[in-house]
Amino acid sequence: MAAARDIDTLLKNWDFQPGEVNARLLKARNGREVLQMRVDMGLLQMETDLRPDGQRPHGAETYYDYLVSEVIREGGSFRLSKEQCGEADREFVQYYHRRLCWLSLREYSRAAKDADHSLAFMDFVREHSPDEEWTISHEQYRPFVLFHRVQAASLAALQDAGPEAAIGEINRGLGQFRDLFARYDAVEQYDEDELVKRLHEMRESVRQRYEVGRTLDEQLAEAIRAENYELAASIRDQMIHDKSHDQIRSPGE
Image 1 (cartoon, helix red, strand yellow):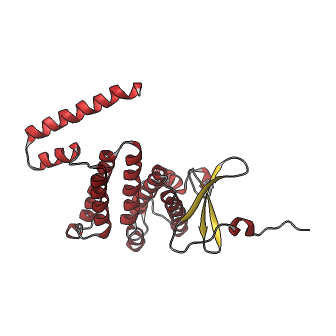
Image 2: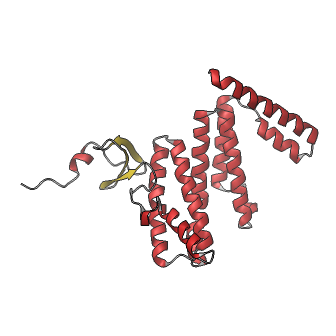
Image 3: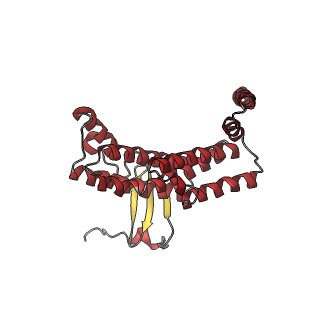
């Protein structure tokens, strides 16, 4: 009798929920961690490190790493071929699926790491794109990936270092969004952008929930904008003092 090859057992007690990211982290038979995502009529299984599909393209850890080595070998005039564009898209999609899973499972540091990979890869393909149309087809997703990155990094900071660190991550992310809008001569659209608004709401939610006022970083930025350099120097001294105090306390904690 032939061995069963269907996945009925895997899907039996795990219903697909439309509109939701259904993910779980579990141990494979050899003891390694794997990530699974329930999709309509099946599931995706991903590795938790490097390429989600576990492959090593041309011996490299990721296809992005392989392409970087190609640029080093061929020089700055390197342009992606049609086949390389297709393989790059495969890696983008894989990291997108895994990033969604990490966010769903509240594995925020891992989600931020995967977003960093995608953003770095997007920088690469923008520089070595074969044509403007292909560049735009990827750049249109940059705000979405950046939003995920800021969201994940701020929630990881909230877990590990507290609300002020989370607010700092959000503010840095908002700065990156402003730079992105400036790159495309669209600064006037910044304040009305939906993702920017959501980050502002997230920051104010953290403030209210944890009763946090203006952080020292924010006070410093305001003092510099107002050209109040005496106040800025005083705030910097306070930040250095607080950091030194934390470093002295941490070994004994």
